[in-house]
Amino acid sequence: RPWRMVLSRSPVEPSPPWGYRGHEMATRAAVAILPDEMPDFFRGAGDHLVYLSPEPDRWRISRYPELDGAGDYEHYVDLENLPQGVLRARDRFSYLQRLHDAGVSAREGGLLPFRIVELHQRLTSLWERWHAEDDPDRRRFIEARIIDDAGVLGHYVTDASQPHHTTIHFDGWDADAPNPEGFSEERGFHSRFETRVVNAHITEDDIARLLPAEPRTVAGPVRAAVLDHIMASHGQLEALYRLDRDVGFNAGSPPHPEAKAFAAERLAEGSEMLATLWWSAYRAGRGSR
View 1 (tube, helix red, strand yellow):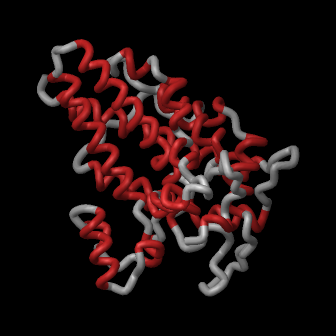
View 2 (cartoon, one colour):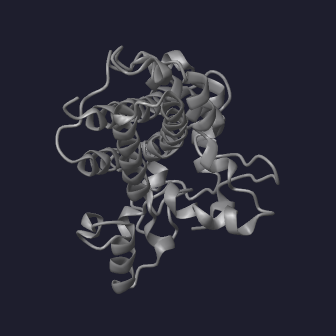
């Protein structure tokens, strides 16, 4: 998956999906709806969580090629390429083996759902240790790890709310795929939508007003909730391309109301899902305590 065709790269700070601003706004909005029951150290770490939300894109440094390529596939999943049932694989390695057996490369598949579930499970295990720890110094060490993983989790959850991260049509409609509605094949659509338009027209208030007062509690397996989140985002793919064709996603003023509303809704979906996963990890880690 040629991310260099999507991102305008510099040797220090790449221009990331959702832009830094989009990730940061979604994360701050997620912190704001956490219940009072969430421990004070977490609710008070808003600035830290916001800073960490673009972190996986800061690892994309071309002069460090092993680091630059290490996490590429974790930012997306190309649902059209996946064999039926493959997302039910036990873990990322079983999934990759099943892709291989079907003649699909890791690059053609992507790892986004597994990355989200793995980080959620790490958070849950950290909360279990936090609740069980009596030593105040060790508890502070665990708190630092919780904030770090929670902030990084936010990146992938909000990536998943952007339909481009769920599809082979990740930066303009794939020229080799059927295109009966005449969707744009223009390279640069990805960053134009989620960086330039968001930076120009979306505010934290636009996201916050779309959120519930508190996050949901996940009922049932978290992986199913994560896949629902990704599938709901993918379900908005054609709407994204229709809006671009019919009204345009443009950074100039004024923004088209439908285009602005769509971008805000996608970020709000990511924000609400992030708060839900944070909250569910805390509750699961607390157990019967």
